Image (cartoon, rainbow over all chains, first blue to last red; front, top):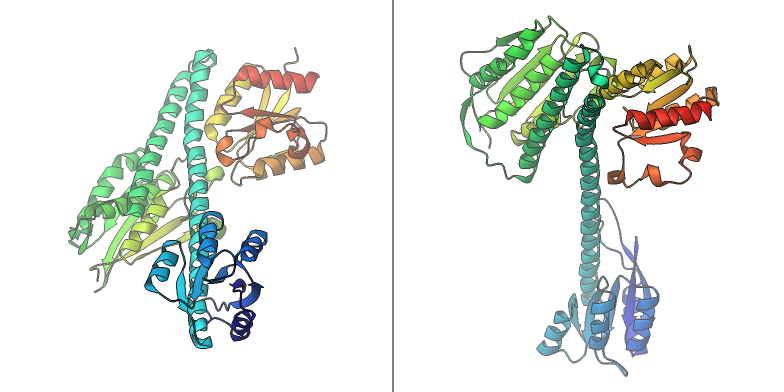
Amino acid sequence: MTLKLLVVDDETGMRMGIRRALRNFQSEPDDTGLIVRLSVEEAESGEQAIEKIKDSPPDIVLLDHRMGGITGLDVLNWMEDNSPDVLAIMITAYASLENAINATKKGAFDFLPKPFTPAELKVAVRQAVKHVLAVREAKRLSEEKRRVRFQFISVLAHELKAPLGAIEGYLYLLQDGTALSNPETLPRVVERSLVRLQGMRKLIYDLLDLTRIESGEKKRELAEVDVVQAANASVETMAPDAASRGIEIVLNAPEHLPMLGDRSELEIILNNLVSNAVKYNRDNGKVTVTLTESPEDVTISVADTGIGMTEEERERLFGEFARIKNEKTRNILGSGLGLNIVKRIAGLYEGSVTVESTPDAGSTFTVTLKKALA
Amino acid sequence: MERNLTILLVDDDQDYIEQMRLMLETGGYTVHTCITREKAEELLGTMKPDIAVIDLMMEQNDDGFVLAYRLKKKYPDVPVIMVTAVTSETGIDFTSAPDTGGWMKADALLQKPVRFEQLEAQIKRLCHG
């Protein structure tokens, strides 16, 4: 990469000296191996410097203080209002504390007293180059963050509008009497509306979980937690839904399995995995929850006998709002956030989430968590 | 009024399918439904609908576009009504684009949730125009 450096000095000798000193300049390679070189331009007065900056802004300006016309400080003043992104290094023969303070107040990045050696010049320029790169990187990251956030909110709005629209549609059918024309239709319309409302509520709760985890706002209460107890609670919660479809839930676990953790986080993991295993199961299927431990880790494994996934579907699974949509999942509602949340929580325990799956045979989700965090 | 038109309805939201089917069947139409673009393409291999109502964003964001394009290629004379809940939050306002019919391969665009009167008005316009 080449950065543009403008030398502003009314002494020809000084401009040439700087040009010579920086001729073969190159920065140390950064983490990505990027090396910066300089293309040097000159201006022989403050007025000319302003014209040049207006015309095509450089990245760095080496700015003499005392010049024939307007001073370096005047140029710095102008830059502050007109091109605040350009980095300035002040040069002056009349090095004084006052000048330095004035220049820095006006936004100069550094101060180079005359006379200086080529080595001193290079050190100052190297620092300036580093700063330019850091500012660019920060800008890129903040743009990326904005873009991701916008995309997230767009998808979220769509996911919230879908159930609203569905419920609204059913209400229209009630309003215009279409839903009343057939006695079987009315209960169906009410039931589906309720199901969509519940789905929407789940989405909102999941979203709150996700936001809390992400922002670090959620106070973690780390204490000794019995994973077996948490798993039992989860199984009990899901038992009615499972029973209504003839699904059996089995828990294979030692009597106790203590670890250092936040009870509510473990519950979120277990509830998500067990409820998925029931939702995506076939009628009269089976869910097997297995808890094991090693000296370091606790492993939670939840296996179902359900619809399974293809490899391609498995790859998308942990993204935000990733819902696998096909003929088999058409009646299953979900926020598309559950597994993303599970993965994020596992991250808090230096853990991992993996999945094995065979279409039409079932899936096994395995979460491994560090028992005691360093 | 023509009452035995065959309508292909493609949407990945089961509830929209149910609502539209209910409306259209009450209105006397014959309705075929699909919840994925692939299924719809399969079905189009065996039947030619009088008109198609297609959701814009299904499993892939562009499924509706792709399906409409393929349908028009196979049956240029079958009108397509595109349905979508996508609006301003994506930065694309489909309904205000003056020539959507051109690049979108759709003859009409409706916002979800669709009212039966709107849908029927479009069906009548496109099938009896």
